[in-house]
Image 1 (cartoon, rainbow, N blue to C red):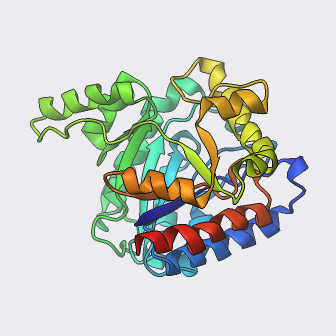
Image 2 (image 1 turned 180 degrees about the vertical axis):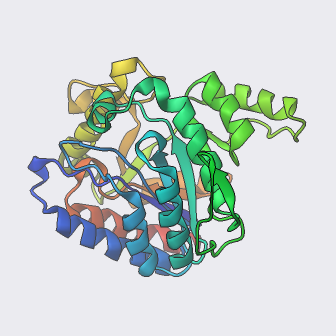
Length: 323
């Protein structure tokens, strides 16, 4: 039985939760998860969000790494255009050492117009900045001197893991897919339909066919003893999660599962965010070829006690069914 956690730290005012308390609870959760055999924990990044969405994933993962021993971490995704590549490389090699090689990266170009305005970066610069960041990180992670913007530099210390964190690209377009094949260690499409461009480019480069897309439709599940009552309590946070992403992604009509919805009834009918009883979830997991449970404990700003109630049901009733 495998499971993972995801955090983005949205914290809308109606959640009535201090951000410091939410951060502290997340550290308790990752320690709890690590002790139960969690295989991966991911954090996401956005900037200037009214609901406090996590803007700085590297220090967050440093804190999480200090509370864990075995679980792997990933930034999904690190928004390349807003970073100084050399400075980021230094931060990441420190994180790689702190975690003893347990961190991986997904790098993306970003899409929220307000973020680019905040940083004074043109959205047209995304391809160049993504390419420079990835190639700089890969050179830095060798631990050897390399040329950076016309001068010789060396990032020290060397990473704990040889070659440093793996670097995949995220994206939803043909250029992003082909760029990933050329410069990265893999591709994580937000639109599964563009995977075939990545696959084609990999073969053109003379490498083995990576096969069909490893990603499909995703769902967020939370647990409650009474699914209807659980939805009443959790639904407003799911609605905030969906509509906040939907508002961002509507700006460019991105290929995305997120679209704004009018009410909780419409959201529940869409089926991407669900509240299940432990018995229902056990049945779904048992029918899967490889049972994998994935939780977003603070989805949409879920209060701490409500998030823990779902995780504790997983610990007490779902995990033992697969022992």
